[in-house]
Length: 374
Ligand code: C2E
Ligand code: SIN
Ligand code: SIN
Ligand code: FE
Ligand code: FE
Image (cartoon, rainbow, N blue to C red; front, side, top):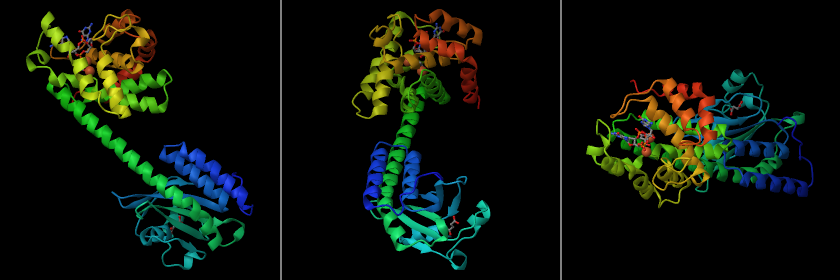
């Protein structure tokens, strides 16, 4: 950001054009970190300060965290001390041009960062209901000048918008993490009945996102499959104990009953309009399809099977084989490798089987990281 071209001192049209460009980019970004960088960059261009920091309030820990701070590592400051905290707590912007003679100033941050603060401009970031969610802070106006009302007004334009975006992003993150938690809990509860440990679902999630990354899916898609794949067997909650927990081999009737878990899971999840539950429905339905068309429930072939389901099939079978089940012992690793070689192009999408065969150590590492031993 040091090199960013400054708009300071230019005509309002140029400033406006810059804001418009940033706004377009910002509107297309949903990642909070990236957003904050874009904003901080925008602020830099509007007011020539040496350092811009966006502090976001962590309400659980009652600290302000520097999500973006030029030239320094991420730092935290208690929300009870300092100029930025003052702006945050009182909900009003503050300009201080002589900090070391201001009682509100917290010189500790300078001591930690080895920086000499000459002047500060701090603006609270308020959400739509008027609550402060963070602070925008500029340090050391360039050219040895003081911060002015004019600088403040310029930045107020930006911060009003910034605050809304932070609020929306925080809300989005909260919704997503709540979804993640509910899904894990649901999936673990489902697996508990079949006496699997909760780690089975975590491992499937990890193998799936690993494979997704290896085959070049976007970060967003990697995340979708990571969060949704743990629900692949949720339909087993409707399978009777006598079948689910049978210690030995199934007969053909038991097999038929068990195979309904794919459609049952799909039916449980299919009504949702949420992306993640939608993906989970797709995976529940398709995770026992086979590449050569001999799977169930629909005997789909090749790319008729959704990629998420094909990925989950590799992850699920690997984890089933590497683990003890009520009806079988864990297989030795070499035997599993043999099966994946044999079943490439039959049970498994050959590209995905190759991801396993080329990355055996990573699969082993995930298996060990979330082992079933307590
Ligand atoms: P699971 O135990 O998690 O197994 C998932 C998938 O891994 C299986 O899907 C199968 O494709 C593969 N797999 C697991 N164990 C073996 C094995 O010993 N040999 C081979 N070649 N592949 C294996 P599948 O067969 O559709 O089974 C779905 C689920 O049905 C299994 O999940 C398990 O919960 C249950 N199940 C399957 N067969 C039996 C059985 O004979 N007895 C009992 N009690 N449950 C079974
Ligand atoms: C303060 O807000 O008082 C400290 C600001 C800083 O030096 O980073
Ligand atoms: C499991 O994941 O525990 C069972 C796997 C399956 O039915 O695919
Ligand atoms: Fe299954
Ligand atoms: Fe499974």
